Image (tube, rainbow, N blue to C red):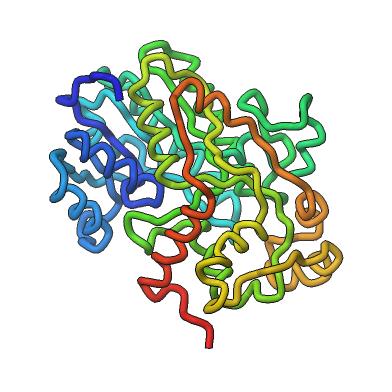
Amino acid sequence: MKQIDKAAPVMITGATGYVAGWIVKKLLDEGFTVHAPVRDLENPDKVKYLNQLAEAAPGTIKYFKADLLDEGSYTEAMQGCEWVFHTASPFTIEVRDPQKELVDPAKLGTLNILNQANQISSVKRVVLTSSCAAIYGDNADLKETPSGIFTEAMWNHSSSLTHQPYSYSKRVAEMEAWEVADKQDRWDLITINPSLVIGPGIHPFASSESFNIVKQFGDGRMKAGAPRLGLGAVDVRDVADAHIQAAFSPEAEGRYIVSAHNTDLLELGRSLLDKYGNDYPLPRKALPKWLVWLVGPLVNKTLTRKVIKLNIDLPWKADNSKGINALGLSYRPLKTSMEEMFQQLIDHNLITRAQ
């Protein structure tokens, strides 16, 4: 990290979340004062892990009451801050009302933060946690790319409220963010676009779809095999590093794909075989596409036949060179991230040993 003024506080939304927890740890370890707006100040369980981080670090953490959809509620938390990290956004796939549960929190929450930044004169840079989902909707989109690889120049135009609504929400929110940023010139906007985030959390009970996916490897739901669902994967600690570098590197600009591995769902499961294969019902073989087509929608309502057609047995490939070259990012091995995440779930009884 370059020499910067650590006297100014840093605000981070969603501080109790999966990615944000590691960003908070890195900031506290560097001696920053972290402003953490939270919805419920009366719930000590929500912040106990963050308090433990602060007790072991030279930095300090201060909490403020705020709600993502409550306009103006971030005024106090953002006051005096030069850097703002906006990580708070739902990552869940199974929803009843995509507009209300995904699009509105992602879009309106982002607008709330950026409109607030427009009113706080100290703010110099906002780092927004977006997603590779804002860049692509389905693996089949890879065929439409000029050189057969997803890049930061691309936007997801294949998702909608009725097809891949989570991905649609990420695209809508990020495009809104750039629209707001482009209308002013006092602060910079940087977006971090990670692929599937894996690895251990600061606390193991963070609400992220990533944990739900990895639990399925150990609880028997994928014992018969896993589909070849192409995806990118990246360690949560490397994603946190990307946010820090993007915030404090003067030359940082635009969007950054943060993804370590072009892989698939089966390979994620197989990465655990060496260490856990004798004790847990991990997937060892690929489920054929026709079987996923037949059974998938019955097992998981989000796995529609359209999703299966456009994603199963199709590769995923993204260009991560911009982040490596401009921000100096480096990535952990897939096996390391998966083993440490799986072990954490075991240690907290979130995966039980197969009988």
